[in-house]
Length: 334
Image 1 (tube, rainbow, N blue to C red):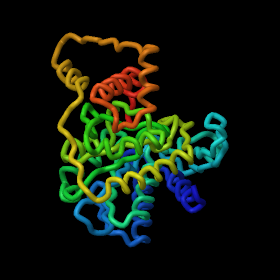
Image 2 (image 1 turned 180 degrees about the vertical axis):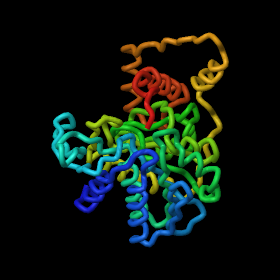
Image 3 (image 1 turned 135 degrees about the vertical axis):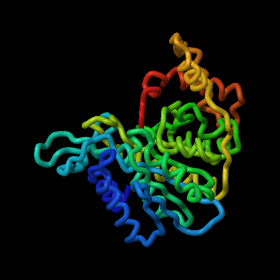
Image 4 (image 1 turned 30 degrees about the vertical axis):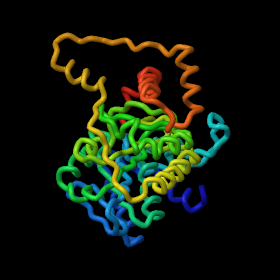
C-alpha cells in the first residue's frame, strides 16, 4: 500500500464512532466528498448516498459508519509488525493517554476506506455509507424503503465487511448473494479464489442483506482485512486491505457497468430455522465432522478452475463450508 493510501487508512481508523453516535464519521465523509466534488446526499438519519459519473448500471460499494466500540476521543492508531502474519505490517488502536488497547474499529472502517478508494479510482460508481449496522442494519433497512430510486440503476453491489483476509459471504440470513453455478460466479469465481478468498461461508447479516431482500442484483461481501473484531485488541492487516482494493478493481474490470440478477433461491438451513420458531419443540441437529476423504476432495477442488466445478462439486463445497466453519461463522454479526 502506498503512503497516501496508508495515511488515509490510518485517518479513517482514527475516527471514533459507535452505533447511534456516528456524527464524527459522517462529518468526516461529508468533508472528503465535498473536497472531491462528488455528488452526494445525506438522509434524515445520516445515511450517505454518492453517485459519480453517468452510466446505465453502476457498481455500488457499501460500508457502515458505526462500530461496536464506545467513542474514545483519545483513540490513536499505531503501526506494528505482527509475527502471527509473517511479520506483516498491521494497524491497531490504543488510548494515547492510558496507553491501553482501544478497539480500532476495522469493522467496518476498513470498508469505509475501501469505498472511498473505489470512488476515487473508478469513473462511474456509486457508494452508500449506512448508519448503525451493528445494532440491526438500521440505516440500510431504512434506505431501501425511503430511497429506492438510488438503487434502481445498480448493476451489482460489493461490501467489504467479512472478517480477516480470506472470507466471503455465500449467504446472509439464508439468502444467496449470488448463485454458485451462475454466469456471475463463472465470471468472478476464479478471480476471487485467486485473491485468496477461500472461505465462502453462511453469515447472519450485514448491510447488503436488506438490499438482497428488496432488490434483484447480485451482491458480494468480501474480506475487509480486520481481525479480532469487536474486541479492544482488534487489528488490521494492511496487505489484506490492499488485497481487497486490488480485488475490487479486478472484479470491476470483469463485471464492468452491467447488471447481474440474483436468483431467488434461499438456503435450506434458514427455512428450517424459521419453521422451527413456530414449533414448541426444539430440535438440535449435529453436523457431520470433516473426514479425511472430505479434506482430500477439497484439496482436489482447489486445484481446479471454478468454471470446471460440477453442480455436485458446488453442493459438496457448500456443505463442507457449512460443517467446517459452522461453529465460528453462524454466530458472527458483522
